[in-house]
Length: 400
Image 1 (cartoon, rainbow, N blue to C red):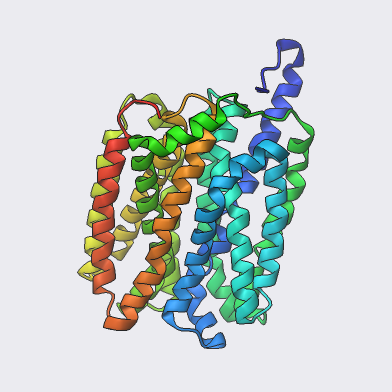
Image 2 (cartoon, rainbow, N blue to C red):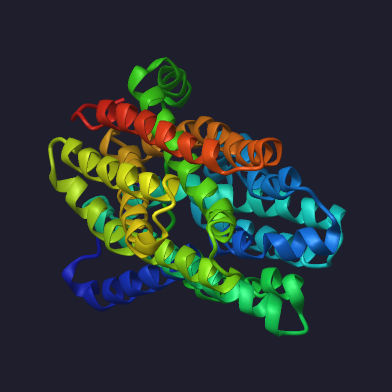
């Protein structure tokens, strides 16, 4: 396996390679959520312009999750043929095409472009945990923290700026969705030094045997369920909390600000939790922490204690950041090699996102049928409890 282990006489190169790598992953992280999170605050503009229902609007968030579920198992195999570095670069090209097509302003291209976006993002979701483990095995927690913080900063910016772009400019919602292609183009440029550097190799003589064992592992299924519940909570909250807040008396711009607070509040947790999780023999204390935060925030939302909504959004962000950071670390903490990490990542994300894909459409459908957000808010609490159970199981120190 090729890992950056430069000797002292190559110290300058090592420093340049490491800095270049960190810059590249920071920019790459900005592309894996902004094409999705920006939809939440401008759903009403898309609905009004194209005449789509709440159910179909929720499906716009579900399409990428279905793509994640379908593509994730194949990502490690494709990376073994093309290399991780080139697979991730090609995914950026596909992502740019999807963003551009989605922004043309008709239902067919909106859906097709969203499918391409989901397929493209799948590769980054699956490959980065094993990429870190292969490239810098003793800095996985730090790199994961940098990656997830960058992801959440860009997601928060997307939520904050999408609505003003759609409302105040001539570009409308198409421009709000399309502007994220700028980040993708920049990322492609900064990724070029990675293509020219040493490539990681995740080949393993026992690949087929190990892949079969993962499907038979109760721990792998527990991690997959934790991934599913964490993703369901995040994508449902991202898609519908702005609309829930509007139904409770918030204006669209204030709802967008609250949604941005939710995203920004994840940042401390997404940085420190992976580093902390790597040092702990058991991560159950982290599980207790984010479960309490989830329950407090969702109860505040359920009972419409709007005067304290800022606090509920901060707690929700802390919970989402901690749970995401921990689940992402399970892929490396519960495996011994980069190959195993990529396999469990593909397996857990495939099953997990399939579970999560139900959420946005289900929440939108229930709201249409009942005319209320009460039942969806109760489902937030149920999903939080299920996440607690499977995260608790996955937090004991052992291996797949």
